[in-house]
Length: 599
Image (cartoon, rainbow, N blue to C red; front, top):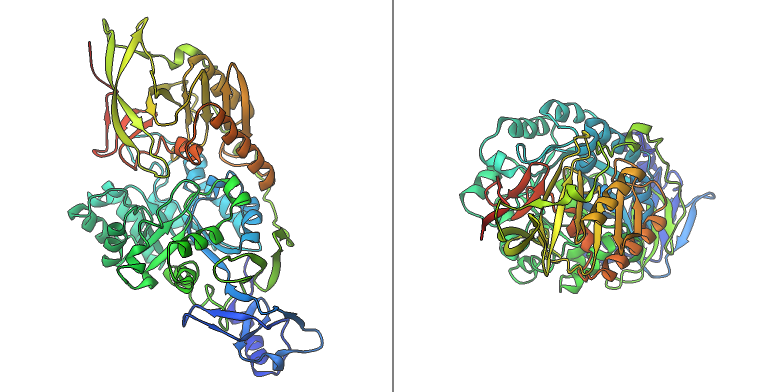
Protein backbone atom coordinates (compact mmCIF):
# COMPACT_ATOMS: atom_id res chain seq x y z
CA UNK A 1 0.00 0.00 0.00
CA UNK A 2 1.39 3.44 -0.90
CA UNK A 3 1.58 6.47 1.35
CA UNK A 4 -1.91 7.70 0.45
CA UNK A 5 -3.58 4.42 1.42
CA UNK A 6 -4.10 3.19 -2.13
CA UNK A 7 -3.15 -0.41 -2.72
CA UNK A 8 -0.95 -0.96 -5.72
CA UNK A 9 -2.21 -3.11 -8.58
CA UNK A 10 0.31 -5.82 -7.63
CA UNK A 11 -1.04 -5.90 -4.07
CA UNK A 12 -4.63 -6.08 -5.31
CA UNK A 13 -4.23 -8.26 -8.41
CA UNK A 14 -5.23 -11.59 -6.85
CA UNK A 15 -8.34 -10.05 -5.28
CA UNK A 16 -9.33 -8.18 -8.45
CA UNK A 17 -9.10 -11.36 -10.53
CA UNK A 18 -11.06 -13.35 -7.94
CA UNK A 19 -13.84 -10.73 -7.81
CA UNK A 20 -14.05 -10.47 -11.61
CA UNK A 21 -14.25 -14.27 -11.83
CA UNK A 22 -16.97 -14.47 -9.20
CA UNK A 23 -14.82 -16.31 -6.66
CA UNK A 24 -14.77 -13.43 -4.17
CA UNK A 25 -17.25 -10.67 -3.33
CA UNK A 26 -16.72 -7.04 -4.29
CA UNK A 27 -16.68 -4.26 -1.75
CA UNK A 28 -19.00 -2.12 -3.91
CA UNK A 29 -21.21 -2.68 -6.94
CA UNK A 30 -22.91 0.07 -8.94
CA UNK A 31 -25.94 -0.91 -11.01
CA UNK A 32 -28.39 0.91 -13.25
CA UNK A 33 -25.98 3.50 -14.61
CA UNK A 34 -25.11 4.78 -18.06
CA UNK A 35 -21.36 4.20 -18.01
CA UNK A 36 -19.13 6.42 -20.12
CA UNK A 37 -16.28 4.39 -21.57
CA UNK A 38 -13.61 6.91 -22.51
CA UNK A 39 -11.46 4.17 -24.01
CA UNK A 40 -14.00 3.53 -26.78
CA UNK A 41 -15.90 6.84 -26.57
CA UNK A 42 -19.33 5.34 -26.01
CA UNK A 43 -22.04 5.13 -23.35
CA UNK A 44 -22.89 1.63 -22.13
CA UNK A 45 -25.60 0.15 -19.95
CA UNK A 46 -22.97 -1.52 -17.78
CA UNK A 47 -22.20 -2.17 -14.13
CA UNK A 48 -19.04 -1.90 -12.07
CA UNK A 49 -17.61 -3.87 -9.18
CA UNK A 50 -14.95 -2.38 -6.89
CA UNK A 51 -12.51 -4.15 -4.58
CA UNK A 52 -9.64 -2.73 -2.55
CA UNK A 53 -10.16 0.70 -4.07
CA UNK A 54 -9.88 -0.48 -7.67
CA UNK A 55 -12.23 -1.52 -10.44
CA UNK A 56 -12.39 -5.32 -10.56
CA UNK A 57 -15.21 -5.89 -13.04
CA UNK A 58 -16.67 -3.51 -15.62
CA UNK A 59 -19.31 -5.07 -17.79
CA UNK A 60 -22.99 -5.84 -18.51
CA UNK A 61 -23.81 -7.65 -15.26
CA UNK A 62 -21.89 -7.57 -11.98
CA UNK A 63 -24.30 -9.80 -10.05
CA UNK A 64 -21.68 -12.56 -9.78
CA UNK A 65 -19.48 -10.12 -7.81
CA UNK A 66 -22.05 -9.54 -5.06
CA UNK A 67 -21.66 -11.16 -1.66
CA UNK A 68 -23.45 -10.75 1.67
CA UNK A 69 -21.27 -7.77 2.67
CA UNK A 70 -21.14 -6.06 -0.73
CA UNK A 71 -22.54 -2.54 -0.85
CA UNK A 72 -24.89 -2.39 -3.83
CA UNK A 73 -25.87 1.03 -5.15
CA UNK A 74 -28.61 1.73 -7.69
CA UNK A 75 -27.50 4.63 -9.84
CA UNK A 76 -31.04 5.51 -10.85
CA UNK A 77 -30.18 5.52 -14.54
CA UNK A 78 -27.75 8.42 -14.06
CA UNK A 79 -24.46 8.80 -15.95
CA UNK A 80 -21.24 7.40 -14.49
CA UNK A 81 -18.05 9.09 -15.68
CA UNK A 82 -14.40 8.68 -14.66
CA UNK A 83 -13.07 11.01 -11.98
CA UNK A 84 -11.91 14.27 -13.55
CA UNK A 85 -8.22 15.11 -13.88
CA UNK A 86 -6.63 18.56 -13.85
CA UNK A 87 -3.50 18.23 -15.98
CA UNK A 88 -1.77 21.47 -15.00
CA UNK A 89 -2.45 23.64 -11.98
CA UNK A 90 -0.96 25.53 -9.07
CA UNK A 91 -2.61 24.83 -5.74
CA UNK A 92 -1.22 28.06 -4.32
CA UNK A 93 -3.34 30.06 -6.78
CA UNK A 94 -6.39 28.95 -4.83
CA UNK A 95 -4.86 30.57 -1.73
CA UNK A 96 -5.34 27.19 -0.06
CA UNK A 97 -3.14 24.39 1.21
CA UNK A 98 -3.30 21.03 -0.61
CA UNK A 99 -5.72 19.66 1.99
CA UNK A 100 -8.15 22.55 1.71
CA UNK A 101 -7.84 22.69 -2.07
CA UNK A 102 -8.67 18.98 -2.27
CA UNK A 103 -11.63 19.48 0.05
CA UNK A 104 -12.88 22.30 -2.19
CA UNK A 105 -12.67 20.43 -5.51
CA UNK A 106 -13.86 16.97 -4.44
CA UNK A 107 -17.57 17.94 -4.68
CA UNK A 108 -16.88 19.11 -8.24
CA UNK A 109 -15.77 15.67 -9.42
CA UNK A 110 -12.03 16.29 -9.50
CA UNK A 111 -10.25 13.18 -8.25
CA UNK A 112 -6.78 13.73 -9.71
CA UNK A 113 -4.54 16.79 -9.91
CA UNK A 114 -1.12 17.31 -11.42
CA UNK A 115 0.31 20.25 -9.51
CA UNK A 116 3.35 22.43 -9.96
CA UNK A 117 4.21 24.14 -6.63
CA UNK A 118 6.66 26.59 -8.14
CA UNK A 119 5.02 29.41 -6.22
CA UNK A 120 6.15 28.10 -2.84
CA UNK A 121 9.48 27.03 -4.37
CA UNK A 122 10.28 30.70 -4.97
CA UNK A 123 9.65 31.47 -1.30
CA UNK A 124 10.87 28.37 0.57
CA UNK A 125 12.86 26.43 -2.01
CA UNK A 126 13.03 22.65 -2.12
CA UNK A 127 11.79 22.44 1.47
CA UNK A 128 8.57 24.21 0.50
CA UNK A 129 8.06 21.81 -2.39
CA UNK A 130 8.51 18.88 0.00
CA UNK A 131 5.92 20.28 2.40
CA UNK A 132 3.39 20.60 -0.44
CA UNK A 133 4.28 17.12 -1.71
CA UNK A 134 3.88 15.54 1.72
CA UNK A 135 0.48 17.10 2.44
CA UNK A 136 -0.65 16.11 -1.07
CA UNK A 137 0.11 12.45 -0.36
CA UNK A 138 -2.09 12.57 2.74
CA UNK A 139 -5.28 13.33 0.80
CA UNK A 140 -8.06 10.94 -0.29
CA UNK A 141 -7.71 12.33 -3.84
CA UNK A 142 -4.77 11.72 -6.18
CA UNK A 143 -2.41 14.69 -6.09
CA UNK A 144 0.76 14.22 -8.12
CA UNK A 145 3.52 16.81 -7.80
CA UNK A 146 5.65 18.18 -10.61
CA UNK A 147 9.04 19.31 -9.40
CA UNK A 148 9.36 23.04 -10.15
CA UNK A 149 11.88 23.76 -12.87
CA UNK A 150 12.36 27.51 -12.79
CA UNK A 151 13.04 29.40 -9.58
CA UNK A 152 13.86 32.03 -10.63
CA UNK A 153 11.73 31.83 -13.75
CA UNK A 154 14.11 34.14 -15.62
CA UNK A 155 17.61 34.26 -14.11
CA UNK A 156 19.08 37.73 -14.14
CA UNK A 157 15.69 39.44 -14.32
CA UNK A 158 14.43 38.75 -10.79
CA UNK A 159 15.61 37.62 -7.36
CA UNK A 160 13.71 34.87 -5.57
CA UNK A 161 13.77 33.72 -1.96
CA UNK A 162 15.42 30.47 -3.06
CA UNK A 163 16.72 28.96 -6.27
CA UNK A 164 16.06 25.51 -7.68
CA UNK A 165 19.08 23.63 -9.02
CA UNK A 166 19.48 20.56 -11.26
CA UNK A 167 20.61 18.71 -8.12
CA UNK A 168 17.31 19.62 -6.45
CA UNK A 169 15.42 18.28 -9.46
CA UNK A 170 17.40 15.03 -9.45
CA UNK A 171 16.74 14.57 -5.72
CA UNK A 172 13.01 15.22 -6.06
CA UNK A 173 12.67 12.67 -8.84
CA UNK A 174 13.15 10.00 -6.15
CA UNK A 175 10.20 11.20 -4.04
CA UNK A 176 7.10 8.97 -4.20
CA UNK A 177 4.62 11.59 -5.40
CA UNK A 178 6.75 13.32 -8.05
CA UNK A 179 5.33 12.76 -11.53
CA UNK A 180 7.63 14.96 -13.58
CA UNK A 181 9.16 18.39 -14.10
CA UNK A 182 7.00 21.49 -13.73
CA UNK A 183 6.49 23.93 -16.57
CA UNK A 184 9.78 24.95 -18.14
CA UNK A 185 9.12 28.69 -18.12
CA UNK A 186 12.65 29.73 -19.01
CA UNK A 187 12.01 29.04 -22.67
CA UNK A 188 14.70 31.49 -23.80
CA UNK A 189 17.17 29.46 -21.74
CA UNK A 190 16.11 26.21 -23.40
CA UNK A 191 16.27 27.81 -26.84
CA UNK A 192 19.77 29.10 -26.07
CA UNK A 193 20.88 25.66 -24.87
CA UNK A 194 21.34 26.76 -21.24
CA UNK A 195 23.19 23.95 -19.46
CA UNK A 196 21.19 24.26 -16.24
CA UNK A 197 17.81 24.04 -17.96
CA UNK A 198 18.87 21.11 -20.13
CA UNK A 199 20.31 19.34 -17.07
CA UNK A 200 16.94 19.59 -15.30
CA UNK A 201 15.15 18.18 -18.34
CA UNK A 202 17.72 15.40 -18.65
CA UNK A 203 17.34 14.44 -14.97
CA UNK A 204 13.59 14.17 -15.48
CA UNK A 205 13.86 12.09 -18.61
CA UNK A 206 16.39 9.77 -16.99
CA UNK A 207 13.80 9.16 -14.30
CA UNK A 208 11.27 8.28 -17.01
CA UNK A 209 8.99 11.17 -16.10
CA UNK A 210 7.16 13.92 -17.95
CA UNK A 211 8.59 17.37 -18.73
CA UNK A 212 6.08 20.21 -18.56
CA UNK A 213 6.27 23.02 -21.07
CA UNK A 214 5.63 26.76 -21.08
CA UNK A 215 6.27 28.60 -24.34
CA UNK A 216 4.81 32.08 -23.83
CA UNK A 217 5.67 33.62 -27.17
CA UNK A 218 3.61 34.12 -30.33
CA UNK A 219 6.67 33.26 -32.46
CA UNK A 220 6.07 29.80 -33.91
CA UNK A 221 9.13 29.91 -36.11
CA UNK A 222 12.66 28.71 -35.40
CA UNK A 223 12.63 29.60 -31.66
CA UNK A 224 9.51 27.48 -31.14
CA UNK A 225 11.06 24.53 -32.98
CA UNK A 226 14.21 24.87 -30.87
CA UNK A 227 12.11 24.84 -27.70
CA UNK A 228 10.26 21.71 -28.86
CA UNK A 229 13.61 20.02 -29.44
CA UNK A 230 14.45 20.74 -25.81
CA UNK A 231 12.05 18.08 -24.60
CA UNK A 232 8.84 19.64 -23.20
CA UNK A 233 5.99 17.16 -23.56
CA UNK A 234 3.12 19.64 -23.27
CA UNK A 235 2.28 23.32 -23.30
CA UNK A 236 -0.57 25.34 -21.80
CA UNK A 237 0.36 28.86 -22.96
CA UNK A 238 -1.52 28.77 -26.25
CA UNK A 239 -4.25 31.34 -26.77
CA UNK A 240 -5.28 30.71 -30.40
CA UNK A 241 -6.18 27.79 -32.64
CA UNK A 242 -2.84 28.07 -34.45
CA UNK A 243 -1.01 27.70 -31.12
CA UNK A 244 -2.80 24.46 -30.31
CA UNK A 245 -2.15 23.04 -33.76
CA UNK A 246 1.53 24.01 -33.70
CA UNK A 247 2.07 22.21 -30.41
CA UNK A 248 0.49 18.91 -31.36
CA UNK A 249 2.31 18.93 -34.68
CA UNK A 250 5.57 19.05 -32.72
CA UNK A 251 4.61 16.06 -30.59
CA UNK A 252 3.44 18.05 -27.57
CA UNK A 253 0.08 17.73 -25.91
CA UNK A 254 -1.85 20.97 -26.18
CA UNK A 255 -3.24 21.85 -22.76
CA UNK A 256 -6.17 24.24 -23.07
CA UNK A 257 -6.91 26.13 -19.88
CA UNK A 258 -9.92 27.71 -18.28
CA UNK A 259 -8.90 29.25 -14.98
CA UNK A 260 -10.38 32.07 -13.00
CA UNK A 261 -8.98 34.64 -15.40
CA UNK A 262 -7.60 32.60 -18.32
CA UNK A 263 -10.16 31.85 -21.05
CA UNK A 264 -8.12 29.94 -23.63
CA UNK A 265 -10.38 26.96 -24.44
CA UNK A 266 -12.86 28.59 -26.80
CA UNK A 267 -10.14 30.09 -29.00
CA UNK A 268 -8.26 26.79 -29.37
CA UNK A 269 -10.83 24.00 -29.28
CA UNK A 270 -11.75 24.73 -32.90
CA UNK A 271 -8.64 22.72 -33.77
CA UNK A 272 -10.84 19.75 -32.84
CA UNK A 273 -14.37 20.96 -33.55
CA UNK A 274 -13.61 22.57 -36.93
CA UNK A 275 -10.20 21.33 -38.07
CA UNK A 276 -10.93 17.75 -36.91
CA UNK A 277 -7.49 17.12 -35.42
CA UNK A 278 -7.03 13.98 -33.32
CA UNK A 279 -8.51 14.92 -29.91
CA UNK A 280 -6.36 12.44 -27.98
CA UNK A 281 -3.50 14.95 -28.12
CA UNK A 282 -5.52 17.70 -26.45
CA UNK A 283 -6.00 18.10 -22.71
CA UNK A 284 -8.10 20.37 -20.49
CA UNK A 285 -6.71 22.09 -17.40
CA UNK A 286 -7.24 25.09 -15.12
CA UNK A 287 -3.70 26.41 -14.45
CA UNK A 288 -4.82 29.00 -11.85
CA UNK A 289 -8.13 28.92 -9.99
CA UNK A 290 -9.09 31.42 -7.32
CA UNK A 291 -10.74 30.08 -4.15
CA UNK A 292 -13.97 31.93 -4.94
CA UNK A 293 -14.11 30.25 -8.34
CA UNK A 294 -13.70 26.83 -6.73
CA UNK A 295 -16.41 27.38 -4.16
CA UNK A 296 -18.91 29.26 -6.32
CA UNK A 297 -18.36 28.04 -9.89
CA UNK A 298 -16.49 24.74 -9.86
CA UNK A 299 -13.23 23.22 -10.96
CA UNK A 300 -12.75 20.69 -13.75
CA UNK A 301 -16.52 20.29 -14.05
CA UNK A 302 -16.61 23.98 -14.95
CA UNK A 303 -13.94 23.46 -17.61
CA UNK A 304 -15.79 20.46 -19.01
CA UNK A 305 -19.10 22.33 -19.26
CA UNK A 306 -17.33 25.21 -20.97
CA UNK A 307 -15.72 22.91 -23.55
CA UNK A 308 -19.14 21.38 -24.29
CA UNK A 309 -20.65 24.86 -24.60
CA UNK A 310 -17.93 25.51 -27.19
CA UNK A 311 -19.58 22.81 -29.33
CA UNK A 312 -17.21 20.03 -28.37
CA UNK A 313 -18.70 16.53 -28.34
CA UNK A 314 -19.28 15.77 -24.63
CA UNK A 315 -17.51 12.42 -24.89
CA UNK A 316 -14.50 14.02 -26.56
CA UNK A 317 -14.42 16.76 -23.93
CA UNK A 318 -14.58 14.10 -21.22
CA UNK A 319 -11.62 12.27 -22.77
CA UNK A 320 -9.65 15.52 -22.60
CA UNK A 321 -10.34 15.71 -18.85
CA UNK A 322 -9.64 12.05 -18.04
CA UNK A 323 -7.92 9.44 -20.18
CA UNK A 324 -5.89 11.90 -22.28
CA UNK A 325 -4.38 13.33 -19.11
CA UNK A 326 -3.65 9.93 -17.59
CA UNK A 327 -2.01 8.73 -20.80
CA UNK A 328 0.12 11.85 -21.01
CA UNK A 329 1.63 11.24 -17.58
CA UNK A 330 2.11 7.50 -18.13
CA UNK A 331 -0.77 6.58 -15.82
CA UNK A 332 -3.28 5.13 -18.29
CA UNK A 333 -3.20 1.77 -16.49
CA UNK A 334 -3.70 3.49 -13.14
CA UNK A 335 -6.44 6.09 -13.61
CA UNK A 336 -8.41 8.16 -16.10
CA UNK A 337 -11.00 5.56 -17.07
CA UNK A 338 -13.53 3.15 -15.64
CA UNK A 339 -11.72 -0.04 -16.51
CA UNK A 340 -10.42 -3.12 -14.63
CA UNK A 341 -7.36 -2.55 -12.48
CA UNK A 342 -7.62 1.22 -12.36
CA UNK A 343 -8.21 3.24 -9.23
CA UNK A 344 -11.95 3.38 -8.62
CA UNK A 345 -12.29 7.12 -9.25
CA UNK A 346 -15.79 7.81 -10.60
CA UNK A 347 -18.48 10.45 -10.62
CA UNK A 348 -22.24 10.09 -10.89
CA UNK A 349 -23.77 13.00 -12.83
CA UNK A 350 -27.27 13.83 -14.02
CA UNK A 351 -26.37 14.06 -17.73
CA UNK A 352 -23.44 14.77 -20.02
CA UNK A 353 -24.28 18.43 -20.65
CA UNK A 354 -25.45 19.91 -17.36
CA UNK A 355 -22.97 17.71 -15.48
CA UNK A 356 -24.52 18.23 -12.09
CA UNK A 357 -22.27 16.30 -9.72
CA UNK A 358 -24.29 13.89 -7.58
CA UNK A 359 -21.70 11.59 -6.00
CA UNK A 360 -17.93 11.32 -6.19
CA UNK A 361 -15.83 8.26 -5.35
CA UNK A 362 -12.05 8.30 -5.13
CA UNK A 363 -10.20 4.99 -4.77
CA UNK A 364 -13.53 3.31 -4.18
CA UNK A 365 -14.53 5.51 -1.23
CA UNK A 366 -17.33 8.07 -1.34
CA UNK A 367 -15.70 11.49 -0.88
CA UNK A 368 -18.53 13.86 -1.80
CA UNK A 369 -22.29 13.77 -2.25
CA UNK A 370 -24.67 16.51 -3.36
CA UNK A 371 -22.02 19.20 -2.97
CA UNK A 372 -20.81 18.17 0.49
CA UNK A 373 -17.63 16.29 1.36
CA UNK A 374 -17.88 13.03 3.29
CA UNK A 375 -14.21 12.20 3.79
CA UNK A 376 -11.29 13.45 5.85
CA UNK A 377 -8.72 15.77 4.28
CA UNK A 378 -5.75 15.66 6.70
CA UNK A 379 -3.59 18.72 7.34
CA UNK A 380 0.18 18.86 7.61
CA UNK A 381 1.59 20.59 10.67
CA UNK A 382 3.12 23.54 8.82
CA UNK A 383 6.29 24.74 10.61
CA UNK A 384 6.57 28.24 12.01
CA UNK A 385 9.24 29.39 9.57
CA UNK A 386 6.82 28.67 6.72
CA UNK A 387 4.47 31.16 8.37
CA UNK A 388 7.03 33.96 8.80
CA UNK A 389 8.12 34.83 5.27
CA UNK A 390 7.32 38.55 4.89
CA UNK A 391 10.59 40.32 5.66
CA UNK A 392 10.45 43.88 4.37
CA UNK A 393 13.35 45.14 6.48
CA UNK A 394 11.64 48.37 7.51
CA UNK A 395 8.29 50.14 7.71
CA UNK A 396 7.58 51.89 4.43
CA UNK A 397 6.41 55.46 3.90
CA UNK A 398 4.78 57.36 1.07
CA UNK A 399 8.22 58.55 -0.08
CA UNK A 400 9.23 54.96 -0.85
CA UNK A 401 6.56 54.93 -3.57
CA UNK A 402 7.59 58.16 -5.28
CA UNK A 403 8.99 57.83 -8.81
CA UNK A 404 11.62 60.55 -9.18
CA UNK A 405 11.46 62.45 -12.45
CA UNK A 406 14.53 63.41 -14.47
CA UNK A 407 15.91 66.74 -13.31
CA UNK A 408 14.06 69.68 -14.80
CA UNK A 409 11.25 67.59 -16.31
CA UNK A 410 7.67 68.89 -16.40
CA UNK A 411 6.20 65.84 -18.15
CA UNK A 412 7.67 62.45 -19.00
CA UNK A 413 7.02 59.82 -21.64
CA UNK A 414 6.70 56.62 -19.60
CA UNK A 415 6.39 52.95 -20.39
CA UNK A 416 3.22 51.53 -18.85
CA UNK A 417 2.20 47.92 -18.18
CA UNK A 418 -1.16 47.36 -19.89
CA UNK A 419 -3.48 44.82 -18.27
CA UNK A 420 -5.50 42.61 -20.67
CA UNK A 421 -8.75 41.18 -19.32
CA UNK A 422 -8.92 37.35 -19.17
CA UNK A 423 -5.41 36.99 -20.57
CA UNK A 424 -2.03 36.35 -18.97
CA UNK A 425 -0.04 38.55 -21.40
CA UNK A 426 0.18 42.30 -20.86
CA UNK A 427 0.60 45.13 -23.37
CA UNK A 428 3.55 47.50 -23.59
CA UNK A 429 1.91 50.93 -23.51
CA UNK A 430 3.25 54.46 -23.27
CA UNK A 431 1.76 57.53 -21.62
CA UNK A 432 2.70 61.16 -21.11
CA UNK A 433 2.57 61.76 -17.35
CA UNK A 434 2.85 64.97 -15.31
CA UNK A 435 5.64 65.80 -12.86
CA UNK A 436 4.73 67.45 -9.55
CA UNK A 437 7.48 68.55 -7.15
CA UNK A 438 9.99 66.32 -8.93
CA UNK A 439 7.79 63.21 -8.76
CA UNK A 440 6.08 61.50 -11.72
CA UNK A 441 2.35 61.17 -11.06
CA UNK A 442 -0.12 58.67 -12.45
CA UNK A 443 -2.90 60.35 -14.42
CA UNK A 444 -6.26 59.24 -15.80
CA UNK A 445 -6.27 55.47 -16.30
CA UNK A 446 -2.59 55.16 -15.33
CA UNK A 447 -1.91 54.03 -11.74
CA UNK A 448 1.31 53.51 -9.89
CA UNK A 449 2.73 50.05 -9.40
CA UNK A 450 5.50 49.05 -7.01
CA UNK A 451 7.32 45.87 -6.19
CA UNK A 452 8.44 45.60 -2.57
CA UNK A 453 11.28 43.17 -1.81
CA UNK A 454 10.10 40.80 0.94
CA UNK A 455 12.49 37.83 1.05
CA UNK A 456 15.77 39.30 2.30
CA UNK A 457 14.66 42.43 4.16
CA UNK A 458 16.45 44.88 1.88
CA UNK A 459 13.72 47.52 2.14
CA UNK A 460 13.97 48.00 -1.63
CA UNK A 461 11.00 49.30 -3.62
CA UNK A 462 10.87 49.39 -7.44
CA UNK A 463 8.30 51.80 -8.88
CA UNK A 464 6.54 51.98 -12.24
CA UNK A 465 3.16 52.49 -13.89
CA UNK A 466 0.22 50.28 -14.90
CA UNK A 467 -3.02 50.82 -16.81
CA UNK A 468 -6.22 48.83 -17.18
CA UNK A 469 -7.64 48.32 -13.70
CA UNK A 470 -9.88 51.37 -13.84
CA UNK A 471 -9.28 52.46 -10.25
CA UNK A 472 -10.75 55.80 -9.20
CA UNK A 473 -10.15 57.87 -6.09
CA UNK A 474 -7.43 57.34 -3.48
CA UNK A 475 -6.73 53.59 -3.06
CA UNK A 476 -4.09 50.88 -2.92
CA UNK A 477 -4.04 47.11 -3.36
CA UNK A 478 -1.09 45.13 -1.98
CA UNK A 479 -0.41 41.41 -2.35
CA UNK A 480 2.35 38.97 -1.42
CA UNK A 481 0.96 36.71 -4.15
CA UNK A 482 3.17 37.99 -6.97
CA UNK A 483 3.97 35.30 -9.50
CA UNK A 484 6.57 33.96 -9.66
CA UNK A 485 9.11 35.61 -7.38
CA UNK A 486 6.39 36.42 -4.84
CA UNK A 487 7.77 39.63 -3.49
CA UNK A 488 4.97 42.14 -2.89
CA UNK A 489 3.04 43.97 -5.60
CA UNK A 490 1.33 47.22 -4.70
CA UNK A 491 -0.93 49.04 -7.18
CA UNK A 492 -2.50 52.34 -6.21
CA UNK A 493 -3.43 55.93 -6.80
CA UNK A 494 -2.29 57.22 -3.40
CA UNK A 495 1.26 56.74 -2.15
CA UNK A 496 0.39 57.01 1.56
CA UNK A 497 -2.16 54.25 1.22
CA UNK A 498 0.29 52.14 -0.83
CA UNK A 499 2.65 52.34 2.14
CA UNK A 500 -0.15 51.54 4.61
CA UNK A 501 -1.22 48.50 2.58
CA UNK A 502 2.33 47.19 2.30
CA UNK A 503 2.98 47.63 6.02
CA UNK A 504 -0.29 45.87 6.83
CA UNK A 505 0.86 42.75 4.99
CA UNK A 506 4.09 42.87 6.95
CA UNK A 507 2.02 42.82 10.14
CA UNK A 508 -0.21 39.86 9.22
CA UNK A 509 2.50 37.75 7.56
CA UNK A 510 1.24 38.00 4.01
CA UNK A 511 -1.94 38.05 1.97
CA UNK A 512 -3.92 40.66 0.07
CA UNK A 513 -5.27 43.95 1.37
CA UNK A 514 -7.19 46.78 -0.26
CA UNK A 515 -7.21 50.30 1.16
CA UNK A 516 -9.47 53.13 0.08
CA UNK A 517 -10.40 56.46 1.61
CA UNK A 518 -7.62 56.05 4.16
CA UNK A 519 -8.79 52.74 5.65
CA UNK A 520 -8.57 49.01 5.02
CA UNK A 521 -11.58 47.79 3.06
CA UNK A 522 -10.70 44.10 2.61
CA UNK A 523 -8.08 41.64 3.83
CA UNK A 524 -7.31 38.04 2.90
CA UNK A 525 -4.73 36.63 5.30
CA UNK A 526 -2.32 34.14 3.71
CA UNK A 527 0.07 33.21 6.50
CA UNK A 528 1.73 30.19 4.85
CA UNK A 529 4.58 31.50 2.66
CA UNK A 530 2.47 34.61 2.09
CA UNK A 531 0.59 32.49 -0.46
CA UNK A 532 -1.87 30.18 1.27
CA UNK A 533 -4.26 29.78 4.15
CA UNK A 534 -5.08 26.54 5.94
CA UNK A 535 -8.52 27.87 6.80
CA UNK A 536 -11.51 26.21 5.10
CA UNK A 537 -12.00 27.11 1.45
CA UNK A 538 -15.40 28.66 2.15
CA UNK A 539 -13.85 31.13 4.62
CA UNK A 540 -11.02 32.07 2.27
CA UNK A 541 -13.47 32.35 -0.64
CA UNK A 542 -15.71 34.65 1.38
CA UNK A 543 -12.79 36.99 2.10
CA UNK A 544 -11.66 36.78 -1.52
CA UNK A 545 -15.18 37.64 -2.66
CA UNK A 546 -15.18 40.63 -0.31
CA UNK A 547 -11.85 41.66 -1.82
CA UNK A 548 -13.35 41.48 -5.29
CA UNK A 549 -16.27 43.65 -4.17
CA UNK A 550 -13.84 46.18 -2.69
CA UNK A 551 -11.88 46.26 -5.96
CA UNK A 552 -15.11 46.86 -7.86
CA UNK A 553 -16.09 49.64 -5.45
CA UNK A 554 -12.69 51.23 -6.17
CA UNK A 555 -13.56 51.33 -9.88
CA UNK A 556 -12.24 48.00 -11.20
CA UNK A 557 -14.71 46.04 -13.35
CA UNK A 558 -12.33 43.45 -14.83
CA UNK A 559 -13.20 39.77 -14.51
CA UNK A 560 -11.15 38.27 -11.66
CA UNK A 561 -8.89 41.29 -11.67
CA UNK A 562 -6.84 40.03 -8.75
CA UNK A 563 -5.40 37.30 -10.97
CA UNK A 564 -4.12 40.00 -13.33
CA UNK A 565 -2.71 41.90 -10.36
CA UNK A 566 -0.88 38.82 -9.10
CA UNK A 567 0.82 38.23 -12.46
CA UNK A 568 2.29 41.68 -12.92
CA UNK A 569 5.72 40.38 -11.84
CA UNK A 570 5.66 37.26 -14.03
CA UNK A 571 8.73 38.03 -16.09
CA UNK A 572 8.33 35.12 -18.52
CA UNK A 573 5.08 36.25 -20.16
CA UNK A 574 5.14 39.25 -22.55
CA UNK A 575 5.11 42.12 -22.85
CA UNK A 576 6.00 44.30 -19.83
CA UNK A 577 6.43 43.18 -16.19
CA UNK A 578 7.97 44.53 -13.00
CA UNK A 579 10.58 42.80 -10.85
CA UNK A 580 12.80 43.62 -7.90
CA UNK A 581 15.46 44.57 -10.46
CA UNK A 582 13.30 46.98 -12.46
CA UNK A 583 10.91 47.07 -15.42
CA UNK A 584 11.28 44.04 -17.69
CA UNK A 585 10.70 43.96 -21.45
CA UNK A 586 9.71 40.31 -21.84
CA UNK A 587 9.72 40.50 -25.64
CA UNK A 588 13.49 40.96 -25.36
CA UNK A 589 14.08 39.41 -21.92
CA UNK A 590 15.94 42.44 -20.69
CA UNK A 591 15.55 45.25 -18.19
CA UNK A 592 14.30 48.52 -19.63
CA UNK A 593 13.93 52.11 -18.46
CA UNK A 594 10.50 53.31 -17.36
CA UNK A 595 11.06 56.83 -18.71
CA UNK A 596 11.63 57.10 -22.46
CA UNK A 597 11.88 60.88 -22.63
CA UNK A 598 10.74 64.11 -21.01
CA UNK A 599 9.98 67.74 -21.68
